[in-house]
Length: 242
Image (cartoon, rainbow, N blue to C red; front, top):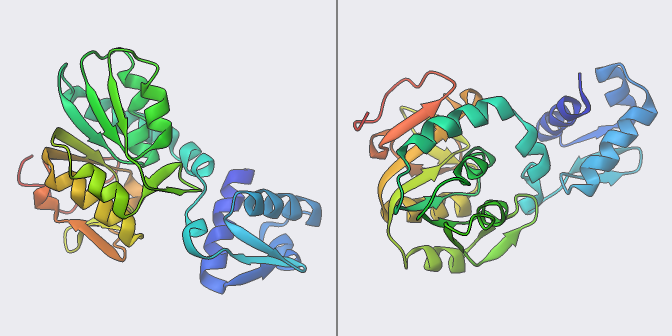
């Protein structure tokens, strides 16, 4: 098991148990105390957890999001594959929304040879990557910076998005199933994505397989509201536009 995999499992344990100690993690992973402490130190610096005497507990608030660098490395081949499929919709001269997910972010480097696009995004990294192409006009929404996702959110972000209309919105999600539709763990993030959907002609969802069949706190939309779904899993129901 890699360090990244262990850190994901530690987060999962913390969400179930509330707190863990070094001795428990040593037994659970069959690793040394020094290795456990290194993992906990990295996770603490990234804002995922808070160190306690002899162990750790979950951080509160926005820090519950997996830090961007950790999420960015997860399922990277799957994300690139989904991005490569979605990018086929792009044509010169279009205006598009791109959310702050690392899955949609994988599209950015593939877009560096495009011309005449206008991109409106809530992702700070996506904006920086696309700014390298002088033939793409990039608008990065303002708002409160989410420390662990390199993105912006909040009322100011929603107000900004309402000023624009786009040909496509490219989004990802926390979960998707036929009963609940597209959902997000964060109500603020769901609100931002609903604004994108309401101002886009068509919406494309990029959803890695582990998110299929799950649902979370806040609804973004029904599956039928989507133009296309690209996933590495099997959705129980296809959008009406497919």
